[in-house]
Length: 440
Image (cartoon, rainbow, N blue to C red; front, top):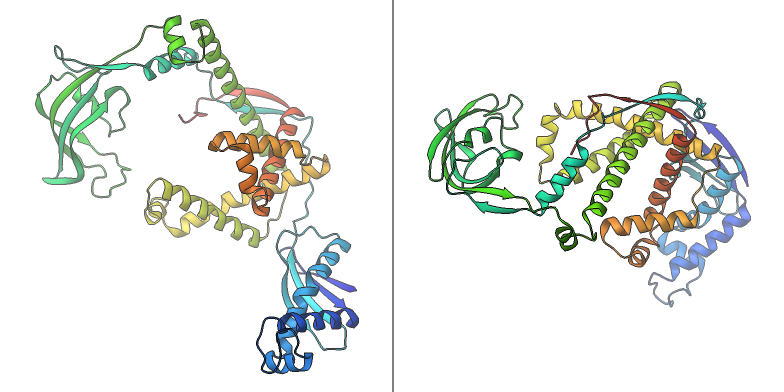
């Protein structure tokens, strides 16, 4: 076998492979026999027609194409291995010359991983931004736990207050017209945690059962409905019920009844452990963000357009699936992002960042001999089975023979191990920044 390598633009490599005539003829004969076993030829049983008859029946080109399918996997893999090519796409056959009795010449194209020099990634001193520590986190968590097990009691002898749950009817109008979807009967709203437009919940405070009244609100300038953006609206309200949330008394008996703990102290210790774990996770995320920013800023990688285009396509699919689960329409999402061109521009930037980080991770993994062990798969599958509520053995049965799933899982494991390595091998000065808010 002979090979010739030609570097094209955008990390595309053309490989011309010469296959000896003897092996090509052998594959041609095998292909002819294989085809004869799947076609009907008058006067012959399947698989018994001579090669010359099969050639007349299906054509030499068809047999040659079948022969190439037999030959190419072996020769392409050997050519990639011999030339130490770091291939990231499936090989594509671009040309071939096949004459029976002569050497066969085929040309394929593959896309290779971009070459680049990795900047320093160990023994760095970096500043990592994190959200300020919430001094009230423990009390909020404990209150949340009690709220989760609270009861609601009807209130008959006082007006509504900001901590109540109210049940009411409402009809909304804007510029004299009924608001589409702006009316309901028996709607229940937690006044302390309202997701209504600003000013709505506040105006339900201080009213009694059976009160009927109007409230005035202004829709936000960035409201999703164009007709309502920045518009004033009136809602006619009828208050049907007021409910007060009654928290249980925090005692050992209560804790035993609703949890796996036996005492209040055990519950409080668990909450503290959880908060500390969350804080450590936040610090780790901040450290990862800092190290990858340093690596990205100091590492030059020319990402080929083909890689960006493929990643943009993947990002679009991810967005579409997520929006579908949320019941949102893709067209409206595109419009909210400023149109197709603006969205593609944003996705292209995100794609370039993801690709660059992925290339950096792979290069560090090779430099540090970070690999995937069987125990890593076991741990990861256990985590996934817990997250999706599927028994580990069922996970193995369902996905164990899926090459795509195993490849994705392997890459996730490498990513995690490299990130852990980077956090462990660098020093971080954690700086609390107000803008680093964590979404609830």
